[in-house]
Image 1 (tube, rainbow, N blue to C red):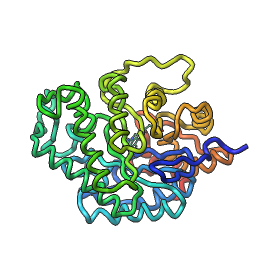
Image 2 (cartoon, rainbow, N blue to C red; image 1 turned 60 degrees about the horizontal axis):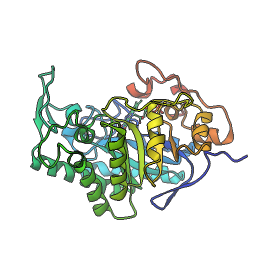
Image 3 (cartoon, rainbow, N blue to C red; image 1 turned 90 degrees about the horizontal axis):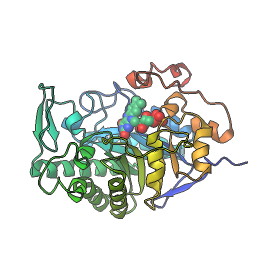
Length: 352
Ligand SMILES: Cc1cc2nc3c(=O)[nH]c(=O)nc-3n(C[C@H](O)[C@H](O)[C@H](O)COP(=O)(O)O)c2cc1C
């Protein structure tokens, strides 16, 4: 019987060959201080594309140097960065995968000394200069996102993913817990949502109708009712897929007892009911039977498989063929692959 995973899906009219999405996974310590890779990403992503992954979201790339979430992180803030993404695009396309890159500004979680925030914040840490953003700073930020998207398009990628989750800058703007502005970009729900919506709208304008725009959606900021509204607005303004993960807000929706996955996965499933574009859910999916459960029951359109794809680049092909995968250990306190790649217990089998 054909695997439920092995079913194409249209994202903005482009056929993605199956239902597995590789979510963005920063390879820490695999880049220099100027945003250039120091370890070959063409091979890293190429292996996952060759292994059958339908849609690859390349790890968070910083739209400006001051917006980096880590000192060694891929950059997409200048044209010189384009070739490193062009190689990834070529290699993934060679193996029939679609590929987009995630764009991020880390805001208050940035690594620089001068750190942009939506509004003043109180913090124990006083080594950083937290700078509430002026309207000019916001305009510059929008231009940084648009220019990064244009670079991604020039590199031959199929699209971009705007990072609106995990308490990075756009998530800081949408969350009333962080955003205390009293101008057009803060206060009411409409004002807090304005910045990501403007960014999406302007990327669509700059990159045309054919370009995929994904949005990494951070749920629960602050309520599911607001999440639904943001999701619908994003859809209206041209987002083609929601890649749902966690936001800043506290858990305020009960997961039914018979739902066998995490709260984060559940939020993806619930948010899907509010929109008409494809939605991917994530978190802790290690085994093919878990992805199959979500797809068979038509709970979701795509399943994001993160750490499990680090442990086994051939996860998708093996899942489709019913072969045994390298089972990710879900190492604690954090994924060992994330340290430098080489520390993953499966590394020696990864043909890297
Ligand atoms: C090493 C590592 C790096 C990550 N980097 C990113 C990132 O760049 N952008 C992002 O939105 N999420 C990032 N995440 C979160 C993943 O995309 C994913 O949501 C998370 O790993 C849960 O999925 P999983 O249980 O299938 O691994 C990262 C997670 C890990 C473990």
